[in-house]
Image (cartoon, rainbow, N blue to C red; front, side):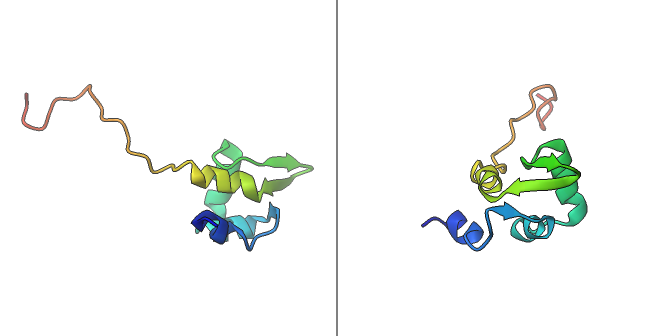
Length: 80
């Protein structure tokens, strides 16, 4: 069993907003922003969000903290 399985294992198949906030350690404003902009995949039916636990787990597993590409349009620090 992986660490993500340990983290998500105690949650039901569908997450509430509160559970999403808890598992990701984020606030409600951030949760709704991420749902609306697609950062967290979910479905909105009749004004209510359906958040699949395993979809959220997959997003976390993808590793959003990968190193950013270095910008090449600015000069080096030493001016070269």
